[in-house]
Length: 250
Length: 215
Image (cartoon, rainbow over all chains, first blue to last red; front, top):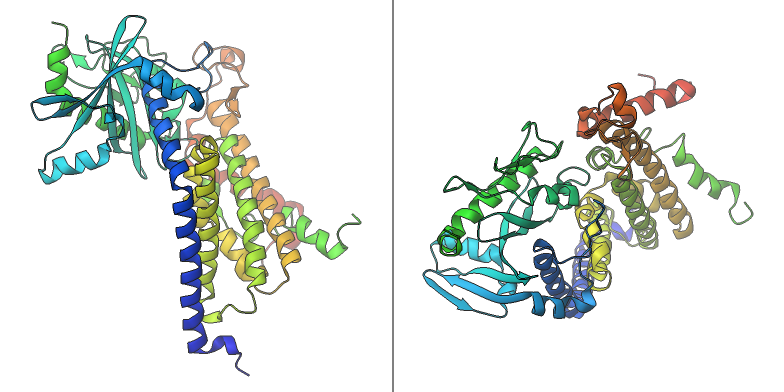
């Protein structure tokens, strides 16, 4: 005997009802939680930018990544980041919401040949100036992004990396402190050329003592993510080169 | 246990050994290969799957009499995807740090065939309470294997457990490394998980020959 759930009409109606029910639950949830999520994402960006310039709660031990707490990050961001600039062609303007610019969209605009905006953040800590530049690229599975803080000699003062879906335990380790700390002190210059910094296997420098080789030690088992990081840094440097030229100490 | 009848207790204990989802049912292999390079990731994945499988089994079980059999796989997929997305969104709004840690697992949970497998094999034919127990039992069995594999891969591949160095420092050559021991880089990459899982299957079947399939 055929059950009522076998009929075509039942199947179609069930599918339609299910789609409507699930769709409304998700749509309701998404719009109800949206303000909270947006707020969290804003704080995260501020935390990331501050992290790159060394404003964080990391202890001296090479332990985990500790950001400025979310309840004070807004004030800290306002006090450490002196200027937020937007580069549009030859024009540089100030914009207090430059940190909200979605770099992914800007990079897409470049590809399409449309006008684009590049944000730069000028930070100051203990009288030292930091130029913090956002980065965006792709890893093995999905997007990777981050921030790189430079001084006027083009020496890296700190970096922050994050990713959407790299493999836990392998590529996901680009956001571990032991990897990010390796970039500190490296230079993006090779002589006078803008070379970026490559994530290199077999550079025979696991302690990262050589700071002028434009290389840091790679992560085992994460070749493609590492190559993604290298490519991301060199693309960013290329993109920002005209601006970097203007701030570089001669 | 007075709380559970003998039959119900078996729902929890069977998947831990003689009906293990990974080593006997051969489900969930892909995630067992992908995320077991570290013990911490293994544990997070095991707990996430426990939550989704427990809840998903109950939902599917409650719907078991109204789901049209022609599209049941799609319905199952929608249920698990919806559950995962709801959890993901709520965490993003109220526990952002935690959601960042779990973000990479979301895709792996939805496509974990243990979940679809238990929906299909158990929840569609059993009541909600028993389905819930089955979900917990199977995710425990899954988690046990994940943790075992994660333990050996992290220990032999990186010389750490939960990120803490336990064998000394490989670069400064202290502890075990002073004797000339080296980390085995092969353990870090996914094929090593296949070998570890293979060894577990071998050990388990040689201890209990009844598990060996005839062909």
